[in-house]
Amino acid sequence: MKNITRSEAIQLVVKEFNLSKVQKEGKSFYSTEGEGWAVFYFDKREYTRDEVLSRLMRIFDNVNIIEGQCRVDPLTLLWTTVHIETRTCER
Image 1 (spheres, rainbow, N blue to C red):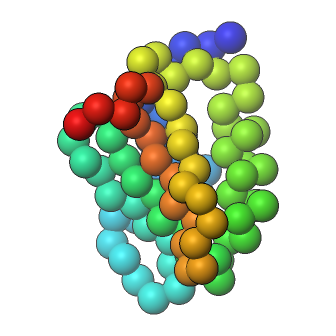
Image 2 (tube, rainbow, N blue to C red):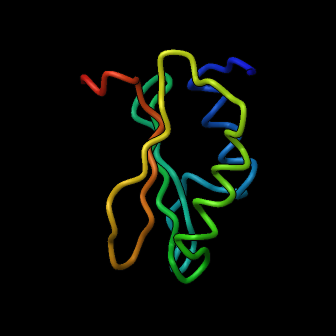
């Protein structure tokens, strides 16, 4: 199993989905919340929830995020929301 940092995990997701920090109509984007914290907003017009989950599972197959995790929010209507955060989720 490969160990990566939360910052490396964020970059893997950004690269896989070609994301920007700028929100545009119909486009997915992300925001950072400090070192090693990020929220990804996948617009369902661009990526289905199943596609997002499938690609995330491929990215993180056999990977350990050191002191971190990738968390997917429950169902929403417009976005699939994914977080890279500390494993304890304390802020």
